[in-house]
Length: 211
Image 1 (cartoon, rainbow, N blue to C red):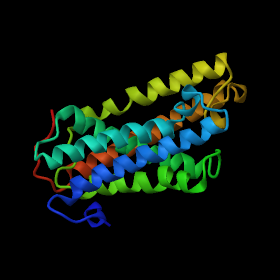
Image 2 (image 1 turned 45 degrees about the horizontal axis):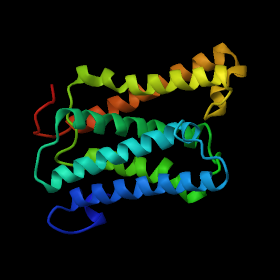
Image 3 (image 1 turned 180 degrees about the horizontal axis):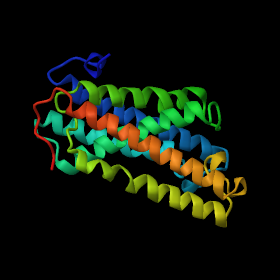
Image 4 (image 1 turned 60 degrees about the horizontal axis):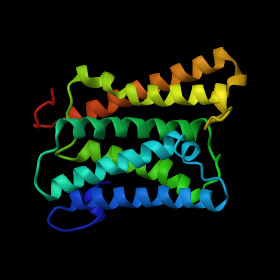
Protein backbone atom coordinates (compact mmCIF):
# COMPACT_ATOMS: atom_id res chain seq x y z
CA UNK A 1 0.00 0.00 0.00
CA UNK A 2 1.28 3.47 -0.86
CA UNK A 3 0.00 6.96 -0.34
CA UNK A 4 0.72 7.50 -4.04
CA UNK A 5 -2.39 5.47 -4.77
CA UNK A 6 -4.66 7.95 -3.04
CA UNK A 7 -4.52 10.47 -5.84
CA UNK A 8 -2.86 11.06 -9.17
CA UNK A 9 -1.03 14.02 -10.62
CA UNK A 10 2.38 15.59 -10.87
CA UNK A 11 3.20 15.23 -7.17
CA UNK A 12 0.68 12.73 -5.83
CA UNK A 13 2.35 12.00 -2.52
CA UNK A 14 2.57 15.69 -1.58
CA UNK A 15 -1.09 16.19 -2.47
CA UNK A 16 -2.06 13.02 -0.58
CA UNK A 17 -0.28 14.23 2.55
CA UNK A 18 -2.17 17.51 2.46
CA UNK A 19 -5.50 15.77 1.83
CA UNK A 20 -4.96 13.25 4.63
CA UNK A 21 -3.80 15.98 7.02
CA UNK A 22 -6.81 18.19 6.30
CA UNK A 23 -9.22 15.27 6.63
CA UNK A 24 -7.76 14.24 9.99
CA UNK A 25 -8.02 17.81 11.31
CA UNK A 26 -11.63 17.84 10.09
CA UNK A 27 -12.35 14.53 11.86
CA UNK A 28 -10.91 15.87 15.13
CA UNK A 29 -12.90 19.10 14.73
CA UNK A 30 -16.07 17.10 14.06
CA UNK A 31 -15.48 15.00 17.16
CA UNK A 32 -14.96 18.15 19.21
CA UNK A 33 -18.15 19.68 17.78
CA UNK A 34 -20.04 16.60 19.00
CA UNK A 35 -18.64 17.14 22.48
CA UNK A 36 -19.69 20.80 22.41
CA UNK A 37 -23.19 19.79 21.31
CA UNK A 38 -23.32 17.42 24.30
CA UNK A 39 -22.34 20.28 26.67
CA UNK A 40 -18.96 18.65 27.25
CA UNK A 41 -16.75 20.95 25.21
CA UNK A 42 -13.98 21.77 27.66
CA UNK A 43 -10.94 22.04 25.32
CA UNK A 44 -8.54 21.06 28.10
CA UNK A 45 -10.41 17.78 28.51
CA UNK A 46 -10.88 17.07 24.80
CA UNK A 47 -7.30 17.83 23.84
CA UNK A 48 -6.09 16.19 27.03
CA UNK A 49 -6.56 12.93 25.16
CA UNK A 50 -3.24 11.91 23.64
CA UNK A 51 -5.05 10.71 20.52
CA UNK A 52 -6.72 14.05 19.80
CA UNK A 53 -3.59 16.03 20.56
CA UNK A 54 -1.17 13.85 18.62
CA UNK A 55 -3.48 13.34 15.64
CA UNK A 56 -3.99 17.10 15.26
CA UNK A 57 -0.30 17.98 15.60
CA UNK A 58 0.87 15.21 13.26
CA UNK A 59 -1.80 16.11 10.70
CA UNK A 60 -0.55 19.71 10.70
CA UNK A 61 3.03 18.49 10.23
CA UNK A 62 1.87 16.32 7.33
CA UNK A 63 0.19 19.34 5.72
CA UNK A 64 3.42 21.32 6.05
CA UNK A 65 5.47 18.46 4.56
CA UNK A 66 2.99 18.16 1.70
CA UNK A 67 3.12 21.89 1.04
CA UNK A 68 6.91 21.82 0.95
CA UNK A 69 6.71 18.92 -1.49
CA UNK A 70 4.40 20.85 -3.80
CA UNK A 71 6.78 23.80 -3.64
CA UNK A 72 9.68 21.42 -4.39
CA UNK A 73 11.46 22.54 -1.25
CA UNK A 74 13.40 20.31 1.12
CA UNK A 75 11.94 19.54 4.53
CA UNK A 76 13.70 21.52 7.31
CA UNK A 77 15.40 19.58 10.06
CA UNK A 78 12.88 20.60 12.75
CA UNK A 79 9.95 19.52 10.57
CA UNK A 80 11.68 16.23 9.76
CA UNK A 81 12.09 15.59 13.48
CA UNK A 82 8.47 16.51 14.23
CA UNK A 83 7.35 14.21 11.40
CA UNK A 84 9.24 11.24 12.88
CA UNK A 85 8.09 11.99 16.44
CA UNK A 86 4.49 12.23 15.26
CA UNK A 87 4.78 8.86 13.51
CA UNK A 88 6.20 7.22 16.64
CA UNK A 89 3.51 8.71 18.86
CA UNK A 90 0.79 7.52 16.47
CA UNK A 91 2.14 3.98 16.76
CA UNK A 92 1.69 4.28 20.53
CA UNK A 93 -1.83 5.66 20.00
CA UNK A 94 -2.72 2.64 17.87
CA UNK A 95 -1.17 0.04 20.18
CA UNK A 96 -2.49 1.50 23.46
CA UNK A 97 -6.01 2.11 22.17
CA UNK A 98 -6.42 -1.21 20.43
CA UNK A 99 -4.61 -3.13 23.17
CA UNK A 100 -5.52 -1.44 26.47
CA UNK A 101 -8.70 0.60 25.94
CA UNK A 102 -10.50 -0.81 22.87
CA UNK A 103 -13.98 0.54 22.18
CA UNK A 104 -13.92 3.18 24.89
CA UNK A 105 -14.83 6.82 24.50
CA UNK A 106 -17.88 8.65 23.21
CA UNK A 107 -16.74 9.30 19.64
CA UNK A 108 -18.53 7.52 16.78
CA UNK A 109 -16.85 4.21 15.85
CA UNK A 110 -15.70 5.52 12.46
CA UNK A 111 -13.92 8.42 14.17
CA UNK A 112 -12.10 6.01 16.50
CA UNK A 113 -11.09 3.78 13.59
CA UNK A 114 -9.85 6.78 11.60
CA UNK A 115 -7.71 8.16 14.42
CA UNK A 116 -6.55 4.90 16.01
CA UNK A 117 -6.04 2.66 12.98
CA UNK A 118 -6.23 4.34 9.58
CA UNK A 119 -4.22 7.51 10.25
CA UNK A 120 -1.38 5.79 12.17
CA UNK A 121 -1.14 3.15 9.42
CA UNK A 122 -0.98 5.74 6.64
CA UNK A 123 1.71 7.77 8.39
CA UNK A 124 3.86 4.70 9.05
CA UNK A 125 3.45 3.50 5.45
CA UNK A 126 4.42 6.98 4.24
CA UNK A 127 7.57 6.97 6.37
CA UNK A 128 8.41 3.45 5.19
CA UNK A 129 8.00 4.15 1.46
CA UNK A 130 8.62 7.85 0.81
CA UNK A 131 11.89 8.85 -0.87
CA UNK A 132 11.91 12.01 1.26
CA UNK A 133 11.05 10.24 4.51
CA UNK A 134 12.62 11.35 7.81
CA UNK A 135 16.24 10.17 7.99
CA UNK A 136 17.60 10.99 11.41
CA UNK A 137 20.74 10.13 13.35
CA UNK A 138 20.28 7.68 16.22
CA UNK A 139 21.59 10.25 18.68
CA UNK A 140 18.42 12.26 18.03
CA UNK A 141 16.14 9.44 19.24
CA UNK A 142 15.77 11.03 22.68
CA UNK A 143 13.83 13.93 21.11
CA UNK A 144 10.79 11.65 21.05
CA UNK A 145 10.51 11.87 24.86
CA UNK A 146 9.90 15.55 25.83
CA UNK A 147 6.39 15.92 24.34
CA UNK A 148 4.94 12.71 25.86
CA UNK A 149 6.66 13.43 29.19
CA UNK A 150 5.02 16.87 29.34
CA UNK A 151 1.66 15.28 28.47
CA UNK A 152 2.03 12.61 31.16
CA UNK A 153 3.08 15.20 33.76
CA UNK A 154 0.06 17.41 33.03
CA UNK A 155 -2.29 14.40 33.14
CA UNK A 156 -0.89 13.18 36.48
CA UNK A 157 -1.11 16.67 37.98
CA UNK A 158 -4.71 17.01 36.82
CA UNK A 159 -5.53 13.57 38.15
CA UNK A 160 -4.16 14.52 41.56
CA UNK A 161 -5.92 17.91 41.64
CA UNK A 162 -9.21 18.03 39.72
CA UNK A 163 -9.51 14.24 39.33
CA UNK A 164 -9.73 14.24 35.52
CA UNK A 165 -7.63 11.81 33.49
CA UNK A 166 -8.16 10.79 29.86
CA UNK A 167 -7.59 7.07 30.41
CA UNK A 168 -8.61 4.86 33.30
CA UNK A 169 -5.19 3.27 33.76
CA UNK A 170 -3.88 6.71 34.83
CA UNK A 171 -6.38 7.19 37.68
CA UNK A 172 -4.59 8.16 40.93
CA UNK A 173 -6.65 5.66 42.95
CA UNK A 174 -4.97 2.81 41.10
CA UNK A 175 -1.94 3.49 43.25
CA UNK A 176 1.61 4.67 42.69
CA UNK A 177 2.91 1.27 41.61
CA UNK A 178 0.25 0.90 38.90
CA UNK A 179 0.79 4.43 37.64
CA UNK A 180 4.56 3.99 37.54
CA UNK A 181 4.22 0.66 35.72
CA UNK A 182 1.92 2.12 33.07
CA UNK A 183 4.04 5.25 32.57
CA UNK A 184 7.24 3.22 32.20
CA UNK A 185 5.43 0.85 29.86
CA UNK A 186 4.15 3.67 27.64
CA UNK A 187 7.56 5.36 27.48
CA UNK A 188 9.23 2.02 26.67
CA UNK A 189 6.70 1.42 23.91
CA UNK A 190 7.32 4.94 22.64
CA UNK A 191 11.07 4.39 22.42
CA UNK A 192 10.56 1.09 20.61
CA UNK A 193 8.14 2.78 18.18
CA UNK A 194 10.59 5.62 17.64
CA UNK A 195 13.43 3.18 16.99
CA UNK A 196 11.26 1.52 14.36
CA UNK A 197 10.43 4.85 12.72
CA UNK A 198 14.09 5.90 12.77
CA UNK A 199 15.08 2.56 11.22
CA UNK A 200 12.43 2.87 8.50
CA UNK A 201 13.63 6.37 7.69
CA UNK A 202 17.24 5.24 7.32
CA UNK A 203 16.46 2.08 5.34
CA UNK A 204 17.73 2.16 1.76
CA UNK A 205 17.67 5.96 1.52
CA UNK A 206 20.34 8.12 -0.04
CA UNK A 207 19.04 11.21 1.72
CA UNK A 208 21.66 12.69 4.07
CA UNK A 209 21.25 12.26 7.81
CA UNK A 210 19.85 15.22 9.76
CA UNK A 211 22.39 16.27 12.35
